[in-house]
Length: 123
Image 1 (cartoon, rainbow, N blue to C red):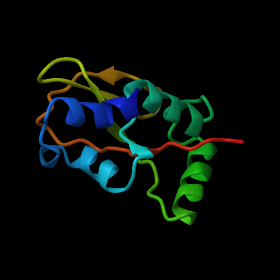
Image 2 (tube, one colour):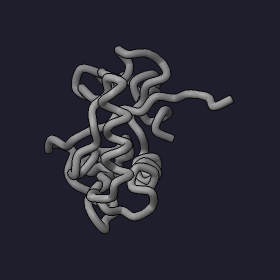
Image 3 (cartoon, rainbow, N blue to C red):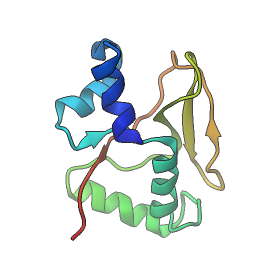
Image 4 (tube, helix red, strand yellow):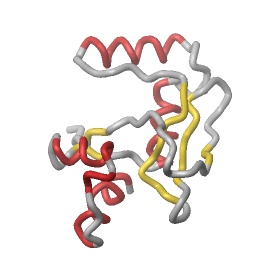
C-alpha cells in the first residue's frame, strides 16, 4: 500500500510533489523507494524489536548497526509518519516507542520523522 500511496496521487491527481518532500525524496531515488503505510511501519517496528516493542531490546541495536554499517540511518525512538491519510487534514503516525505500536491521527501540517522503504525481492 505504501508504494501506491507514494506514487499514484501525484500521477493521477496532479498534486505538486514539491509540497511533499518525503515523497519527493523517494521518487528522486528511484521507483523502488516508497513511503511505507502505517501497516508496513508497524511490521518494521515488530521486526526490529523482535516482537518485544521495546526500544531497548538488543535486536533494535543490532538492526540499527546493520543499517549504519551499510550507509543507512538508524531507527530512533519517535513517531514515524506513514503514507496513509485518514482525512484531508490528518495522517497516520506509528510510535516507535517502548510498549507502543499506536497509530495516531495527527494533523498533516506538523513535521514528523519519516522512514523511506526500499522494495526488493528475496530469492
